[in-house]
Image (spheres, rainbow, N blue to C red):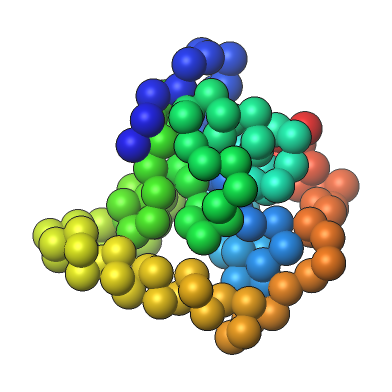
Length: 140
């Protein structure tokens, strides 16, 4: 977890692997359930994503975890996923209860999915292009 150096960003930001089908599906799921439109998105590979990673002192070339930036703090792996669930409407915050599972167990499961996501779900040659309706939710 790192601190965000700039206060220029409002609301939580989710950085995802832009070519991963699983990550694209999760992004669509989050947009659907984030009815207040608080969440902002960028791909890890994009200029905005790379800038935010650099600001947080995060690796610029590792796309094995999505990143949640919330209140200036950077979260990855299972902690990011569980904190993200808390931001959604009921029943999704109930998943946050899994935080009681030790991180080494949660992250081991997360890592198995992350390592196999391209094989299990596929990937694209380029990042997903957001539709006109949701484009304002994505950082440039």
